Image (cartoon, rainbow, N blue to C red):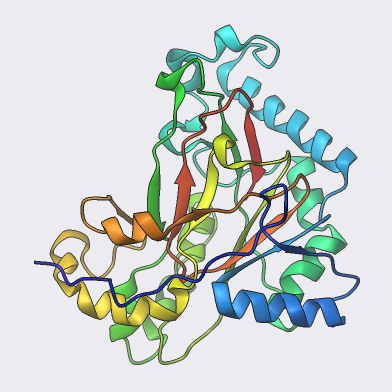
Amino acid sequence: MMASTTKFQSPVIPRDSDGFVKSFTLSSYNCPEATEARTFFEKYGFVVIANVYTPEQCNDTISDIWNVIESFVRQPVRNDEQLWTPEIWSRTGIVHEGIIGGASLWTRQILLNRQTPALHTAFASVLGTENLLVNQDRYGMFRPAKKHPERSTTTNLHLDMNPWLYIDDDDNSHQLEILSKLRYKSDIDWITENNEPGCAKVGELHVQGLVNLADNLEEDGGFWLVPGFHKYLPQWAADHREMLNIYGHYNQFIMIGRKYIPELYDAACHISSRAGSAILWDQRTMHGSRANCSARPRYAQF
């Protein structure tokens, strides 16, 4: 039987009058607001940084998402929702998670976005340094499912790391061994790199992130997480050691169904944010996405 998580108390996330999670606007990585953002990040395991992308940049990126989708499906589909069918959409990437592309994408727009000064400032403010080592990822697009429930993505919680290896290793030798073997001849190597955060005893801070390209309300689905879980992960992993029988020590993507961790699903919160906002989270934070139940698409860059 699995241990109870009732001793874990998830903090309540502050929101504004429109339902969006509290966000921060930064002028530099060491401005007073950056200190406040870092304090928020340390408490909740995530932070929202506003106005990282301009409205024009968001629109250009949404257009690029459609360019990528249409390159996969080999026909124009952006202006006709009747074509967003399971058969056509099966060619776009990881459909049940709303991910566009099977591995990292390399369009001009996605690379320009990663060089955005405001995005650099957001990560630098959380990490406490302007010297960043940046990963490469892909896009997210959740089709509207209000009238088409068959287009819904899978609501899930997961970790992009192995929590038992994280607490059991005495040093980062396993991480360094894996990273030293990557040659980046395959785009999936970037995903492998992302999922190797080292061990608790060394305590490196690894930060993941996404940018919402349109206002993302709760009914639109998308990113959610368990606030404060980053502080609880070592205890949770120790309490749930029997899950090693399912995942092993070396599986670096741990998706866990509600039946195994109902308390964490109940504690998880959707991180609603405005267009152009970056959501940055501690890699130790249990996170995932919720299905889109609205009539609007959900667009994001990871």
